[in-house]
Amino acid sequence: MQLPAYATLLTDIRNRVLTITVNRPDALNALSSRTVEDLEHCITAVAEVLHNDDGAWPVRGLIITGAGKAFVAGADIREMAAMSPDDAHDHSSRMHKVTLALEELPVPVIAAVNGYALGGGCELAMACDLIYAASNASFGQPEVGLGLVPGFGGSVRLPRRVGPGLARELLFTGRRLTAAEAREAGLVTAVFNSVDELLEGARSTLDLAARQSPAAIALVKRTLAETEGRRVPEALVTEADAFRAAFATEDKAEGTRAFLAKEPPNFPGR
Ligand code: COA
Image 1 (tube, helix red, strand yellow):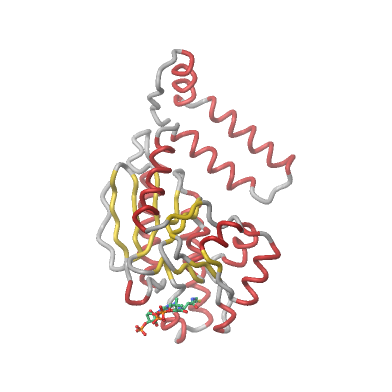
Image 2 (cartoon, protein in one colour):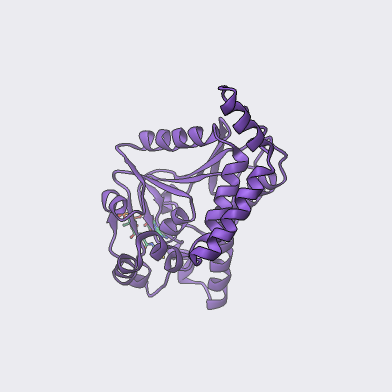
């Protein structure tokens, strides 16, 4: 698939893995309105292709990372200093759309956090399925130190990721977690010694996922999104629906056939 050139993002598709690099290193990749607009365009374009795709799956996974020493050091404070309350609401709503679109992508998305993931950076990472980190990465929601509050999902997603107690502490104090602490808190699932190893680790997970049924992964992602926070009996109804849907796919026919024939599956992706 073809993506246009973006002012604030670099994109690269290799082995059907799309890497999106937020590219404003002079501002530690802070999310300006332009960056949010670029992200919205890019994620929407990928979603359109994948949701209307008939089994070709030109993208099997996404990696989001940052250029230079930061992942993303937050929303752009310079821009926000001059923003009206109504403009701020639009900025927040627009980035909410981006984070929801990321969560709704039918393929796995990994945030490869190569440095600071503060404020909007931590929020962008939390909209990804998995967060992998370089050992020098740090995570935090420092908004209250600026008289601000999280606007890109932090107050909603952080408690779900790390639990209500630690989330409150981080949101009230702005304290940063190291990569090791973030791993212990369950925010990060793997820590790597260098940025190269981080990106390699993310690619290797996506390559492994790309050998599974894409139709099944899409169903699992949807089930996870639709059941989060719901009561178990209702959530299990959704799971049973997904189970039924899987039985109507060609991937299920191929996966079970291949297992019984003792052959590797060749999933049609539908
Ligand atoms: N918005 C806009 N610009 C930012 C930014 C942000 N969120 N974070 C960093 N920058 C800019 C700095 O203003 C600086 O620009 P300058 O060179 O024109 O002065 C440049 O990026 C480098 O940042 P600097 O602070 O000099 O780097 P550092 O290594 O000393 O410190 C941080 C790194 C991340 C600790 C520090 O930049 C910081 O605290 N950033 C803000 C984090 C934050 O509060 N985010 C939440 C926003 S709601």
